[in-house]
Image (cartoon, rainbow, N blue to C red):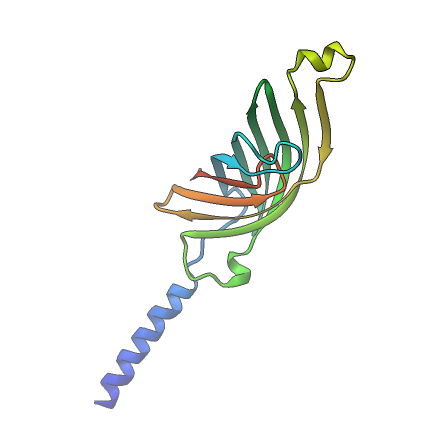
Length: 172
C-alpha cells in the first residue's frame, strides 16, 4: 500500500513539476501584433475621444522584444492627435515563474513622436499655430492572455496616446 501511495505522489509531483515550467516562451524571433482601442489620457482634453492603436513586438533575445507602435485619436470639433514610435519590453514570465503558457506579462519604455492638431480656423486667423508636436518617452506595463495558440487579448497601461489600451493580440 505504501508503494502505491508513493507512486501516486511521485506521478502527481512530476505532473505538477511539468506544469510549473509550461511558460509562454518569448525568444528571438517571437512576434506579437496588437490591434486595439485606447481610452483615458492626459492634458487639456482629459482623454476624451476614442483612440485606435497598433503595435508589433519582435523578440531579439530571450525575454526582450523591440518594436513599433502607432496610434490615432479624434477628440471632436476637428481636434485629433497621433503618435508613432519605437519601444522595447521585458517579459516577466520566466522571472515570475508563471505556470501557464497562455499569459504574458511585460513592461517597457519607448520613444515616440506625438502631434496634436486643433483644426480650428480661428486659431490660425489670430496667428497661432494650429498644431503641437513633441518627442517623448512613453512607458508601459501590460499583459496578454491567449485563448488559442495564435489569438489572445491584451490590456496595457501607459503614458502614450491613451492611458488604457485594450484589444486583440496575434502571435505570428
